[in-house]
Length: 482
Image 1 (cartoon, one colour):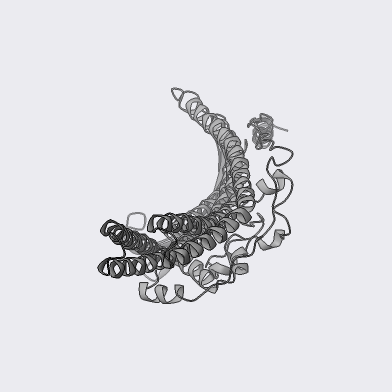
Image 2 (cartoon, one colour):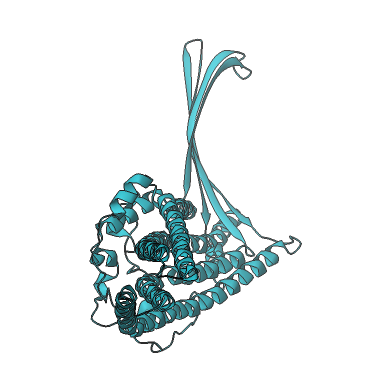
């Protein structure tokens, strides 16, 4: 074996073993998961007699078909859902791009020309075509880490898409409940204004007949005017709520007013149940899931930044064919190459790569802190909703008894006043008390439904973390909060 042959063998051996030798160096990324243990049990009572499976479509149990249609309409026009969909598409494109970086690239090239060929000393037609391939050998996993980060962020974007739909469903349900409550209170105010107006009319007749003092009649007129002003103010609040709901859903206001005029059944006492263990509930929170995926993505980016500080190895090659035609004679030329096998070793960059690594580590620390905070926030939101739900349940019977009792007292006082056995001051005092009790009962019913909505949202809206996101969003009422 000659010396030149021995040297060639050694060079090829070094080229073959170099990737393995460099690959022995490994980057060390921080853990992709960080501990954020939730409490072992809820510190608030859970709702009973509900089903875990009812959460995703809880509004269908209200006996209010209009609400289902409104949620559909709002999710179809929601800018928040459109933004979440756009971010999902961007995350998917980033994932495809990062996956492509792990594969060889292949480009085709072709050209043709006619002119003076110096080698042939005559005019000739020249054409050539070829394939150019290149591949970066991912020695230290920089590209793999980038793909891992893209995968995690895609999963997080899918979760946020679901969260956007849950948010819209909750917002529409809350606004619809607020509007229906306002309309119920408007009916109470109008009945009260009508009653006070009748009292003022009777007092005026009695004054003219000389049986009622002018001051008493003035009190009745003032009370009637106050009731009219209160009804007008309540009507204004309802109109504001109406226009807010129109903006949310994109419905025409006359259509919405007509549909809202139809009576709706009373809401059931229990709409759904949530898991007894906080960890199971947090696993169904899209925002918590996204925060956890962000930690994993940030961890992968730290590994990618570390890998940028090590050598890079790439391999290229080409296959080509060319022909030259001059004076009816065609000459063909075929070529191919494998290489070069290029090694790039960073020597000095003024600390740029080290700074990028530090920045990636800082982003990881931030993501870990945000994830822990998100877990604490999620636990707090669930327990606050549970506390409010329990409070409304405890107050419901008392508020209903108070409203019925004060109404009976007002009816009795009004009968006594008509018989001349009670003063107008007594009647107005009984009326104010009864009105306040009726409004409190209506407000309590709204507060209870708002607590259910808050619990639905705080518990993740029934999302299971496994549902794939369709490119074209399906029916909103059927898939919100999956």
